[in-house]
Image 1 (cartoon, each protein chain N blue to C red):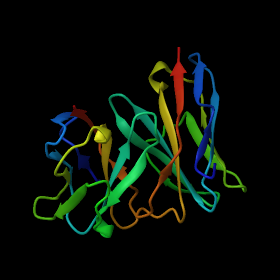
Image 2: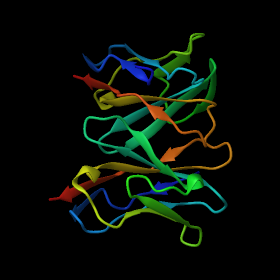
Image 3: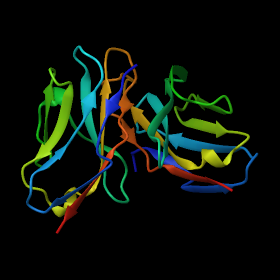
Image 4: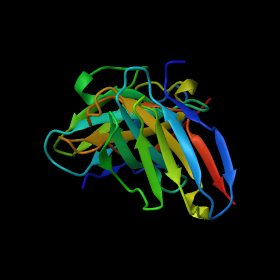
Length: 114
Length: 108
């Protein structure tokens, strides 16, 4: 599958814990985006990377961090988890990281914090 | 800051009836506008974009600068159109901003 992949599919953890979500972009795409989708907030942009460098930051909490590695995969780290962090986390990728690019989305990781 | 408003969280339409999903954006100028769709158990994907002026799966969207709207329309709804629809916009170097989405249900 040459599309965007995300692991794991589901994650259940406890408050106070730390988790890492992983994303591999489409082949040839240089930019990765992270979004959080909760029931009442819709799709919220968290952060964008382009070719290893942070390009744009959205509503990302200080407890959250991300990086893009030389092979272009990305990880989103969520720490000191709270109940309110339970959500679907999507990764998307695009070729040039421009706002006008079509973004290709992964299947998402469902995080449940108990 | 950019803002995208989709006033309807839920919309139910009978099969064969016309569909209109509303989207309004908050700033003037010439933004890029998109509609993304998420079918059940599938990933979010681009449906159409303003710049392409295309019709995808029978859907079209017209930019109305006077009303700052980019409503999505289809003359005859089909059951397979049931999905979550997101309007999104960007301008210049500003990031793509999504609306909160409208869940469309087609009643057989």
